[in-house]
Length: 355
Image (cartoon, rainbow, N blue to C red):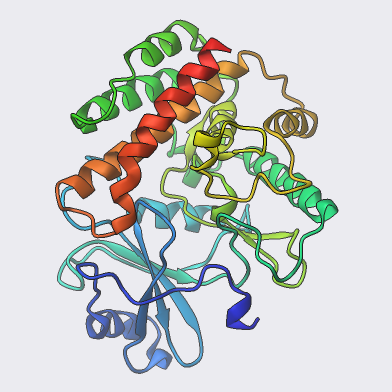
């Protein structure tokens, strides 16, 4: 595929987030002596959690994932766990990249990391790429494949040993509510709201039992899927498995809905859009839910809880990143706006509750 067709091109590494290419090259040379000289290192701009780099060798491209620099929330950014998830999923869900090597030796780059093969293809960002052109029918088909892939993921047998150990059994919704409430409060800065009324509303309406226990991605959205460059409505890869676990599939759906900004949303909320879900032909959130119900056979009750919780959780993720940035522990200048994002998400939660 021509590099110009890839909508997720890597660029120069941001200052303060450099890798020791020679050290990485020596480590990978033990696993595959054919790689030869140290790679050229570039960095992907997408993603706001773990850092992702392109390792460019003459004969192949590899991708390296490492935690962010500086202080991190306890239990977050576990790239070794993410690599193990990919290794376990490979035989049963072939849309994941193959892991090449895992490093837990801090002398290499100062942190754990893993290296995987790059899945070539198109990764959508804020807008549809001009080439190849997407028709309304293409956009609809892409949405259908998006839902089909999520349903396919939720149907993976989690009783196989490598996946069963990911989850903790019944009570996932309650653990998520308690966990994200605590994380938000720990990460809160003085310039954002406390979400107190939203948290109270969620506490009153959270379901007493989980809908099911399935493999869930926990960040399933367009910029975490890779599209076939020749047939761009077809999904050929799913990326970013950092938060994958065994849990309630409706929580996974609610997390996806939090990113699904559509053309009819209010102008302030539309400014947060990070994927082209407003394009002509794209499903609305209601249509996405209907498609998921039809394909999965699940009837979704208490939908408002899952939608509002998805927005609250997204605010918690953004606030953790914003706090790291405000304390000087994240170099990406885009993170300076994440406080504004948190405030918009709090208002969005309230408007959905009122509706």
